[in-house]
Length: 168
Image (cartoon, rainbow, N blue to C red; front, side):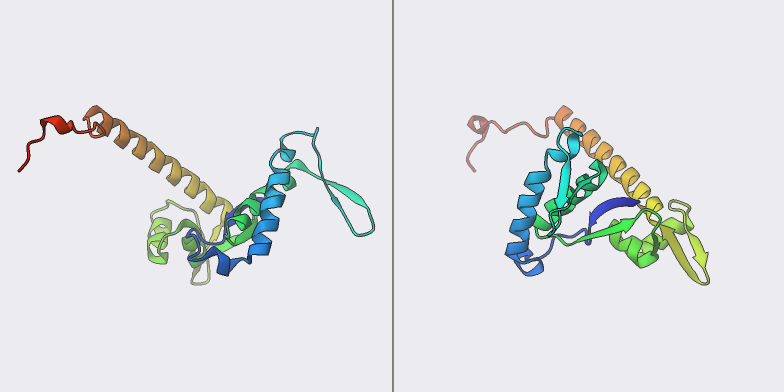
């Protein structure tokens, strides 16, 4: 089973034109457009037709994964697909979370992210890393919402009345 489609790096490439050729990005954009409504229902099945004309319908879950991957490639972002039972090194997990390896190790040692030791090395399940990421992102969004609310209440977004300003 496939867990998720993630950009292979959390950082946008410096120059998408150098990362993925324009021809491939254009083809990916066309595929993403074609698949944009297909995974929503069985009414619009997605099918692959091979060179001999044999047609195979894709399950909706697979069509959704291909759609998301095509969107990312169209943006010029490399994509990696990993099975949900994949095991990551601390560096791979840190890269996925956009953290330093040392900070990730501290999170593991504090029990924030489950891991197991293999010899002297820690190994993390992809599902655990993605669960931590989802929780972290939800906490961040909640904090940003609270901050925005507080700023609005304090008048932080009010435009200054220029007529009351005096020239220096």
